[in-house]
Length: 188
Image (cartoon, rainbow, N blue to C red; front, side):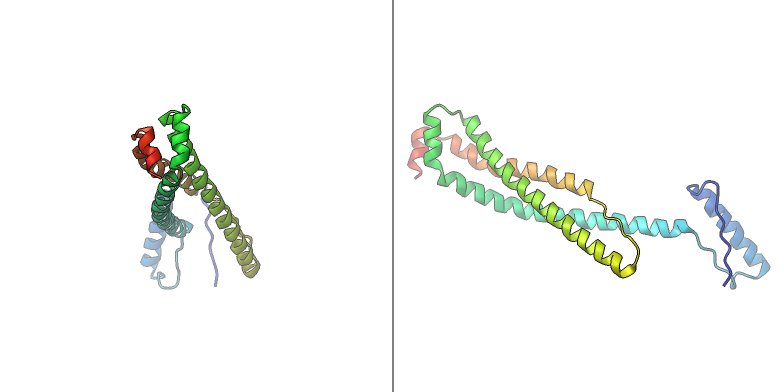
């Protein structure tokens, strides 16, 4: 099977590639040789590859969102339980002069540390698993497959983690801080 490879000066110019492909197809049809030849463009495969990549990115973002939504409720119940377990400490802190705002910040920081450490360990484990699968695939195929770190997804996870840490702690701590010191101490 003979091949003819045409390399253009501007390989990114899609209109020129389409025009050249149309001209060649028309010429082959006019000569009656369309059945014997196939015109193939690298841009067609590149478009399909980019569409598949965008679809996978959307699927992974949906999975990340659902996972973070489920983790939000788990974190909310954990932080509520934690706050109501520590009402004695909170009432003591309030009575020695800690402001409501400082105590709320303290628990928001605690939730933030929990969420960020969980997110970092999840990303680290996922990257290690992805790297090992990439190495294994490279060995089987015999071609190197580059490992790319999902930067956009990482920052999406980081942003949602910060929002979840704030929302999961703000409501329960605000509810608790709106009470007077003796009311907080009586919750025990």
